[in-house]
Length: 80
Image (cartoon, rainbow, N blue to C red; front, side):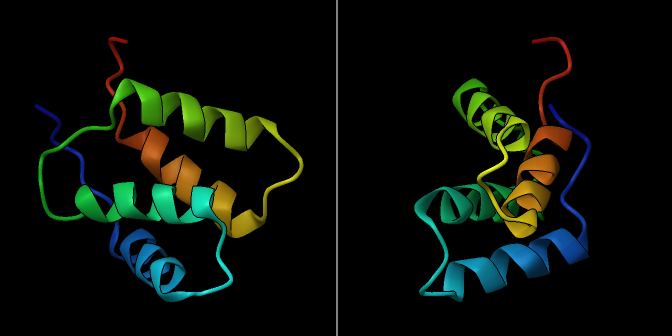
């Protein structure tokens, strides 16, 4: 069980991203993950951890997408 939850700022950014028709598929995927963790004890799955890590290591993604990726990783299982 994960006791961390996404911050209100991260949840707002995620919501805005999901409503943005110009947002990339990866950004929307990360945003959905952030929102799913905003009011629950869910933790990031391994596949999403890998995806978020790849976003942070790449130079091709926007700061918004990287911010969402960081929020997703902050919810990850530290034992993994």
